[in-house]
Image 1 (cartoon, rainbow, N blue to C red):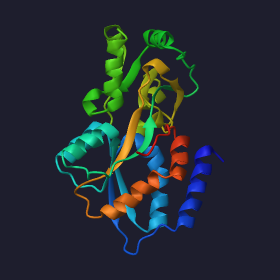
Image 2: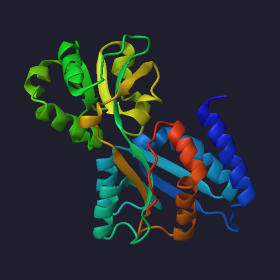
Image 3: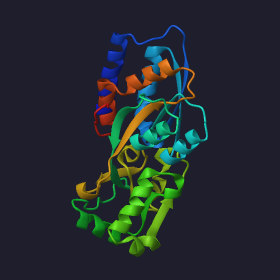
Image 4: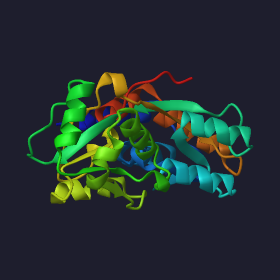
Length: 263
């Protein structure tokens, strides 16, 4: 039994003991960054069982999800970076005071399953690995990907962006299926790819070579908030409480997330 299964089993017991439930079942629509897909695919079914509510999740690049909220797309719960939600709240799209921190997401490097793992022990080793790689991938910033935007800026800061340009492969796959972001790596078309660790661990055919060196690591604080368009704000809050509980934190940690304070 793996760590995620153990954590989820404990979570289910907690939910049953607490007796979470509602007299009138609600339909809760969640818009979420694709980076949460691995954990939410475990947590949302448990919430549905314990609450009697129905919850559907639509995934996409964080920037694209934020853009849809700006255009008044309806939702109940929105899960994005804390900074994106704060901006949406200031624009009247997220209910004031509803933001709750969920987890942190760090960046790592993916390689084909079974392939030798590059040395990522420090910044210089990371640069050497990039310069010697046949091809390097990351999410195209035009998709609204926070990891892609950070990676593009990082290569500029490291002074190797121009040298790497001929061998860069920018991923533009649909953000609703984050597990497909690393298909090029799995097929052997891309030697190494930088991306969010939580997406690497659910991608088929790839291994996590390791996180980025501490000096250049970027951990994104993910949070959940209630959309001002929600017709079921109390049920939306119950879902947020569920996925931000201590037991849910164990599932998130087992899915590659970093623990954070709720507030």
